Structures are given as C-alpha cells and as structure tokens.
Length: 583
Ligand code: GAL
Image (cartoon, rainbow, N blue to C red):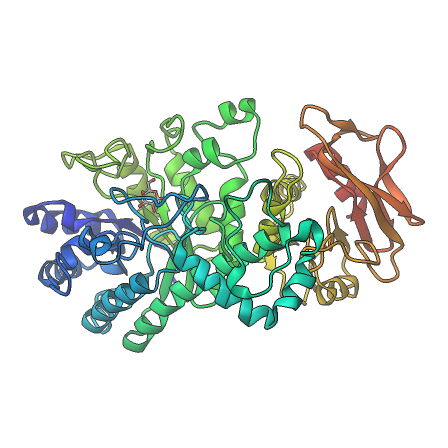
C-alpha cells in the first residue's frame, strides 16, 4: 500500500464557486484524501427530518471529479441548534452540576438516550445515501471523543445509565457495598436507585465509586461509537476510522478501536507541547517550534496498537494553532518532518488540518495550507515536497518495536482517581519510560493489557498498572524476556481495594510494598549513581538483589533473574541507568 496524504475540508464554509478550484488544487498538490462533513449537521438537517444532502452530493462529486477520495465524517460532534430544543437535557453536565451549553461543539452527553436516537437517525441516512458511493473511501465517526473534557458527564441520564451499569455488574447491592468497602464512613446503600454520581460530595468520594463511574463513562463512549460503526458497516465496505486526541480524553481507546478498521489521531505537536506534555518551562522553550521529540512518536505507536496495525494521522498541524496558551509557528521544514516521522512509524496516511484558514468562527487564528484568500500558506510547499517524495518512497512501513510498553487506559483512570500527589499521573510515568527507551536507541511497541505474547522483545516495561490482574502478571513472568514491573503494579484489586497479600504479589519474586510516599516535584530524592526519584516512591521489603538505591540506601529497583521491580517514579537519568543494567 502506498503512503498517502490528505486534507480536512469544509465545503459548507465556502461558496460553491470555489469548490472546483479547491478540488483541482488539492489534486495538483498530490493529495489523495479530503475529509469532510464532520461538523456539517446544521446544513445536512436544517430542521428536524428536513434532510438536505444535495450540497454534499455536489461536494463529493466535485472532489471525486478531481480524482480525490473522501473520508466522510458523521456530524455527531456538532448537533444543530434545534436539537436541544427537542432534547433540553442532552447537554453534558460538569462536575459542578451545571449543564454546558450550545455555541461551540461536543455539546452532548454520551448517555442521553434521545440524543443517541438522533445520531442513529443521521448516521443511517448518511450511510444509506453514501455507503456505496465510489468516492467515499473511508468514514470517520464523530470527532475526537472526549475532547474538551466531554467523556464525563454528571447528568440525570448518566446517573440512570450508571445505575443500570452497576446493577449489571454487581447484581446485588450488598455485593457493591462489600466490594467498594462502603462500611467506611457509613456509605452503605440499600438499593441501586440510591447510588448517585460521585460529584458534589462534601469531601472526596470513595475511590471505588469514582473508578466505577470512569469505567461506566468509558463504556458509554465505546457503545456510542459502536452504534455508528454497526450502521455504517451495514451499508458500506469502506474502512471506519475515529480521530483520537493527543493524551487520552478519559475513555478506553482500545475499546473504541476494537470497532474500527483504522485508528487515527490528531497531531498538534506545538499546541500539545504547551498544554499536554509533562515538561519544564525550559523544555517547552527549547522545543516551542519543533514539538516534544517523543510525544508525537508515542501517539503514533499507541494508535498503531489501537488500530491493530492500521493507523493514520487524521489532522496534522500545518502552522500555528489557536488554542494553546501561546501559539508559535513551526520551524521551516517542520511540517514535512512531522509527516515523515508518522510515515516512519507506519502511518498509512497523513491529512493536514485544514485546507484554507477560516474567515469566521473560533479558529480564525489557526493556520491552514492556504490563507483565507486562497494563496499558499508556508506549509503548502512543504506538503508539495512530501507529496513528490512519497511518489518514489517504499510502501507503508511495517513497524516492529525492539521493546514493548504495556499500556492500559484503566490504569490511567485509577491514577486519576487516586494520584495522592499533584502532577502524578499515569501518562507522565509511561511517557518517562518511552523517552528513555528511545534515548537508548530502542523502538517501542505499545501493547494493551490483554497482550500475552511478548516474544522477540528485548525488554517489556509494565509500569503503573494499578489493577494488574494475575493473568498478565503470569504471562509477563513466564515470557522469558526481561520485564520491569512497578511502581504501583497491582497496587489495587479490580475494585480499588488494597490486595492481601500485599502488592505486587509476583509469585516467586520476593518483593512486598510496605509503604509509599508522594513528594512535591521540587523535593527530589537522589539515586546513587545519578538521577532522582520524582513525585512517588515505595518502600520495599525484599530479599531480591538491589540494583539501584536512593542516597539513604533504600531499594529503588530490585531484580530476580529477568524480572525487575521498580519502586519509584524516576527521572530520565536514573531510569536510563536501570534499563542499561537490564539490557
Ligand atoms: C482538533 C479538532 C479540529 C480542530 C483542530 C484545531 O482538536 O479535531 O476540529 O478544531 O483541533 O487545531
């Protein structure tokens, strides 16, 4: 399969007179794909059941005549204004109990049954009309699930759905009380109908309650997406894609990915450096125009796993964005370089966001490939160059890592539920490992927690899997590959209780976590041989070999044969020294 390029295009935002010329120029530029439609619901259905597809027919045909293929987006991220009149309770509700309103996007609650029905209706209409259209080469469901903090909604619909979800999971309220430990603070319930959402409590709610709500909310995203993929598949053979955000958006991407043919993510290296990368101010300054050197690669590798090998960049930053605290322009050549980095990690396609800079609306200050008057923006020529280069380039790369990182969204929820220290999160921990593997020259594969075959890897790291089950522990222990567990491996059971025997409970490996402490990041603890413990550490009881210790002699990493347990969140230098010993 050849590598391809594309662009995000909004025909509904531009006069028809320019469509033909736009399509011709896209094609001349060497693009294959135009992604369209994902925010166009108000034009597709200006009022309830008044469907107006004529303009979309014309837009698709215009693009097709120029030789382009279309990625058709379902418009469910932007319900039109008449929709909340019909369903006043459809808005997502914040943790403060206030509904979020109309006037931007993603103004829906995943649990609202009425809104779900509207989505089924519009997706069915689109799939029936365009399912066999020869120019529709792929579909995109919705747009960036969870973006703008929308995976969690504290609505009445979510509460009702949560109660049904709890009933299905625990069957009997005494089982829920028991497993959540509700006798603590007299939180016991007499009936599922008494269980509320874990917001607006006087002080912190029960972590088991919060974790259950995060899992429920994630399942809602998965089922919301599945409703769309089932409809599209019934009418079309074209692959179905979703464009995930950088970082995680609060739901299980592997769960959504299981219903997709291809995973995609939206790569905004400069915007995400400013808003999502755990970094010092100096690091941010240094990479302000290039992006963090590992962040994009991490998401490429993650999405390759989510798409079971097939993945795209659906939106590539083409110049300055508008949404971070500051929005610098990239270095000359960076857009080309980002594109090639994605291809080197096995991307099938890279699409730029967006074709022409918007004249109106929230993204007026976001660059495109063209300026608002249609003349080329700086990225235009870079894209032209990549398009020429990929003509002669080998097919899509089959990527295989030297090392593997076991990665689980449920662990992200668990860290979020109980960080016990500011700035302590699962992503920061995993990303630290990822950086170090790359510094050691190793390519990484990201594997889901359901992985059982680790053969061929030089090392497998499985940090921070809070609710790690026995099956995964056993598969890793028996893999014959060097494995790093910890910190926090199996620190909680699946219901967020401290397990006994105490963690990590790795059969045959004598390590017991006998205490933990969290520390402000400006109170680092030195590690002998170089580097620091940052933010989180455990105190171990062990007879295993200590391969790294802190300045006071406490074990930081212990080893038994191929197995290593790491008892802290470490900086790059300390982590690098430990990995070097294992390799
Ligand atoms: C993405 C989103 C796009 C656009 C872009 C701007 O998160 O999917 O629709 O808003 O950001 O950078």
